[in-house]
Length: 419
Ligand SMILES: *[C@@H]1O[C@H](CO)[C@@H](O)[C@H](O)[C@H]1NC(C)=O
Image 1 (cartoon, rainbow, N blue to C red):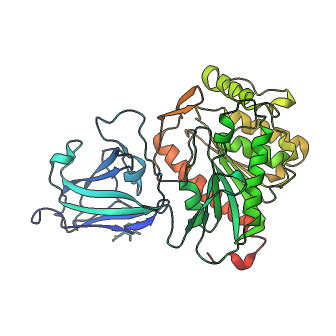
Image 2 (image 1 turned 90 degrees about the vertical axis):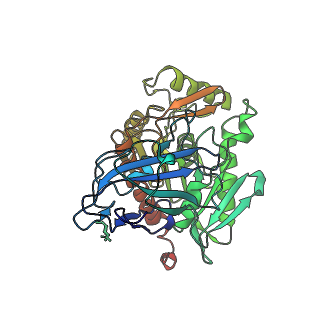
């Protein structure tokens, strides 16, 4: 492998959090040497994804992916993390595959390799000039994972390293997701005690259930967080994506048993929903929006939307302007107007991202335009967004979400901000 080939490939840091950037460096190549940097990742479900990009060594024989442009491949231009966000299922994969991680107690491994020339396919049959395995973790060293069963909950709590007490975050995914631990683990890696729960399963089975019971269930979850000895009972926030955002709106507006005192983050969600209806009503309404018409007008009927004028805590809305799953831009506009009329719009921050789709997740988890996802009888498979813009939005939104949570949840205990 030595001789006319690059003899040094390094990645720094080679072990880190999934939302942390890394630098890939090729050194000691012949000046002007053309090479392909390739990354391969095998998910736990056995599916493989890959990305690759074409580079040319400079006069010193170096390529630095953090400052040199890719001339082609799955991304182009200067994109330090392009190798991760442009990952695609390897040729021949079945459709609907995306980067995914279930067991957050093990890292995701990415094999980064250098190949001679500007290649586009057949990597398995070629000789690698150099290869490094990179580990990306959702759980930072010292983060603890605690299964939660109190109060009938099915959940997992992640606690940051150290004795605490820590601010708490209740972290909710959308419908169709049972328990996905990635984001909560990552929040704990950033200093928040974060619990995610399976809040849909108990109700999916009984469509007669009024949606108020879902709120009751979420209040139980908030209470469990508040009463935990390592959590600051006065610093609890909620964060939800998609349907998780819809119930977060509802909790922020109506929950008086346990107030969401500190803040709420709603990603790609809407305040429009049959507020006092049954789960069946809710599903019927969602079915209408998803399968029939994204452009349904925002209802004027007050029973069809959460009264966000009642919200008393800071509210951060994250909106993808190319959300093809849900009319979130229209919802955000209506929320803004409702809050202006009610005099609480000073609590509202809207971050709206052009060319960005529905699934705004922590960064470097890729962009998914299409994946298969079933809620009850509804199959959703179109999320929207343009890859580069969507991935930039994920980076920006995640950074701002962390700052928002820090500003609103750490204020009550400045002695605890050393994380
Ligand atoms: C690679 O580029 C990054 C970003 O410009 C820089 O911080 C880093 O020092 C570079 N690494 C080397 C070894 O030149």
